[in-house]
Structure formats: structure tokens, C-alpha cells
Length: 356
Image (spheres, rainbow, N blue to C red):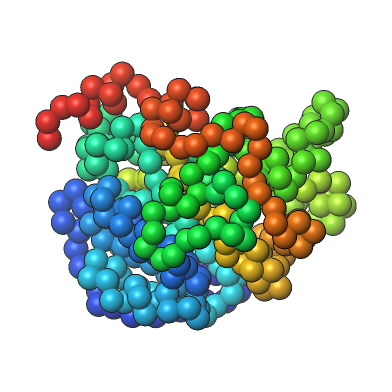
């Protein structure tokens, strides 16, 4: 299978057999990964429990046994590419290619390996219950907040082994502040804030009102006219910004569907008013080594400047802890609804209580 990716063509080599036709109401998960053997058992366990029927995963030249482990899983279809991550628009082209071939007509969960989808009532309501509700109300997608989880102690002392409970290793999150502003691309909102802004972008949080207005104008121009992002004079005037926390991981895929920038933005969809959360388990004991490695590779956005910032902070503070006085231990989805980090509704609350 090949797909255009800038001036090159990405070859996705199948490591397992063809997936075949979708069963009625089949739910499929899609992901790209590189050296994720540590988190894969927990990832697969979580999504199998939610009700995912099959997985379609692109491995980008892993060297830690990731592809071999995935190839052993009976419900996983593995593809492999050695092409450049940034030439595939940071993996977006690979995911769109898989979704176009295997996702049409299915509800598709598209996530990173370190992201665990939850939604109001997901402790008891399966993805099949949720997607039936969304279809009944003619919704085509659900958006989510990417919520960083972190351990109580120093990152470099986090004890986590493949297959362990990720929440037991990294149970804390920042309840706020999170800033939302409207944008012109689906799902229509850009969210920033939380732990990564607090720890790695403190100067962004401390901006004056004038600086915030200046940044908003520049960012709006860059979003509306994407090629302007690389104009040197404009780039020089844009200050480093913390990561976007908007994601659209759950979509009823059709022939018009396409992710525009990883899973942050998508082609126009009818988005549900209810929202979910992606629990983000990037911050374990391997984070420092990953930051150094990705900085050297330079394959992530803007030559991996975000990872360079992570690496520099961790070099200066190798025993860093991400905790602060407001750190909150994750308990359940009702907690996030109460904090305003997840949106529930009476209609969805009633639907998930009905027998299937």
C-alpha cells in the first residue's frame, strides 16, 4: 500500500494478513508507533476492555521488539515503514492511508500508544454503547481533552514495567488552568494549559494581556494560511507555545474523512456535545531518554523544538518531580465531569443506563 507524502511515497509493508470486511458495528483502532513495547500491553488491554474489535498499527522502524510483539497479537494488523516521520506530516499521511483502506463504514478510534480514551461513564458503558448513542443522534465524532498524567515522585524513579497498570504508576494530573479559544477547523476549539505548560512553558503562562493578543493574531493567521507558518519573519515573531490539547480520536469514518494534523483537527464533522478525555501517559521513567533521542532525530514538528525544550529542562533538573500543590489524583470519569474537563449530558447519561 502506498500513499502520497509530500515528494515521496510511503511504503507500508504488511506484517500480518489482510483485515477483511468489517463485521456489523465493528469498532477499529488505529495508531502509529515507534519503540512503544513498554506501553503496548496496557494499551491493548485498555482498548480491548472498551470494546475495540481490531487494531491497525503502523510501526515506524522500531528497534525494541514493538513490531514483533504486535505481530503476535491475533486482533492486530501490523504495517511497517522506514520512511521519515516528518515527511508523512508527522504520521498523519500514514494514518489517513490506513483509515481510507480499513476504516470506512466503521467507528474508528485513532490514538497514540500512550493515550487511553475515557468518556463519561466509560467505567461501565462500552464503546459500542457510546457509538450507538452517537449514531442515533447523528453525531459523527467525539472530541477529547489530552490530559497529562504523571507520577508522585521524580520521573527518573518511576517504577513501571510492561503490563503494569499505568494509572498506578502515574495517577496525578493538573485540574487547571486550561484555556479554550475558538478556531476555524473542526472540532472548533483549541485547548492549551495543564502540566506541560506549567513545567515546560512557564513564560507562556506568565504573558501579559498585550502579549496574549499579539500571539492570538499571529496564531490565527498561521492556522488560516498554513504555508505562512514557515515564513521566516513570521516564525521569528511567534513565541514557543505549549502543546495543543485538542484531539478528535473517535470518528465514524467515511470517504470524505481525513485528519488534517495528526488527530488534533479533522475534516468537517458533526461533533457530539459530549466530550471525552485521553489520559496521556508520556511521563514515565523513559521520558528523559526519549526527549534526548527525539531531539537528535529532529523528526517532530518544527525540528523537534518541543522535545528539545523537554530535554533541556530535564538536563538542568534530572530529579524533577511534576507535582505541585494543586496536583489531583485521578479517581473516575465523574471527577473530570465535575472539574469541567469532560462534558456529560442527560441524554447520554440515560442512554448508558439502558439495557443493550
